[in-house]
Image (cartoon, rainbow, N blue to C red):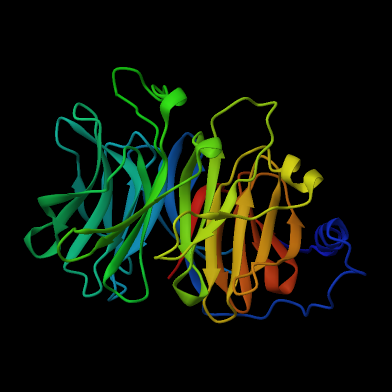
Amino acid sequence: MVINRRQFTAGSLALIGMAGPAKWAVAAETGARFAGTAKSGNGYVAAVYNANGQILREFLLEGRGHGLALSPDGQTLAVFARRPGYYIRLYGLNDGRLIRDIHPAADRHFYGHGIFAPNGDILYATENDFEGERGVIGIYDAARNFVRIGEYETGEIGPHELVLMQDQKTIAVANGGIATHPDFPRQKLNLFDMTPSLSYLDRESGEKLQEARLPDELHQLSIRHLAEGPDQTIWFAGQFQGSRQQITDIIGYHRRGMDQPQMIQLEAGLTARLHNYGGSVSCNLKTGKVAVTSPRGGVVLIFDGRTRQLEQVLESADICAVSPFDKSFIASTGQGEILDLPHETSSLTKLLWDNHAIAL
């Protein structure tokens, strides 16, 4: 069922003082497809859907899913388990065939995200060497049924999301800085001496090209999610691990060569509304717009990636997953909605959507 989202848009625009709702057209039929993870009944799935909220295909998962990656030829969908993760499930996107389940080595677990190399021959996945307290990127050979053939160190513990930059040579990694161990499920073991960072690695050699750390006063801001915006700028969102009474900036950007990441300073009330929690980051390369979601705040913020100015604040409860679509974005919520942001429409689905989605 598709419903109009005029109240959703009008209320959100008022937050940043704009005169009124944009005059958006009714959503048109489109061939664009997206994939996300979700809860379905008593289980978990990855699902392919369109901008009108039609579920086109579902893939069963072993447990709760998190990030996804699509092979460059569009044939293979990789789904990564939620941290601490113990599976990567690979499906044929078009025929629904289960290609392979990858399980981590005995002293590793997955951190929820991964990417393919430009020609699809390698799958990279963020991992935790929990005995060695090292963050690594596992390297899996697609030509050999995704056997693990090596790893790169990320320079810091807790690597979460990684992206292949547009130069096709550099991997940018969000190092959350949080030490975890499977003997203490989801416990954070080093909150007082965290050192989150952004790392840039040479994709072919694993050489660390640069590591940029947050200033000392933000050492408890775990950098979790990122996307490349215009001009080779990495945009990121963090999740603050300090006192809940302390309200801090959680969105920032960085370019190679800069000493430290720069934080985006929002109006105080809006900063408080984010509840120190960023959920997902996406960039629309057609327009240079950057979207950052906060499911705890029930908002998606849309920035001009070049000027770094906030342009829109859109509201919807438990909104998190966001992907580029048309001249804006498409998003989904934990309550089952697919939000077509360019066209101000919403579709209610049977699935309760999780944190991340990708455009196919």
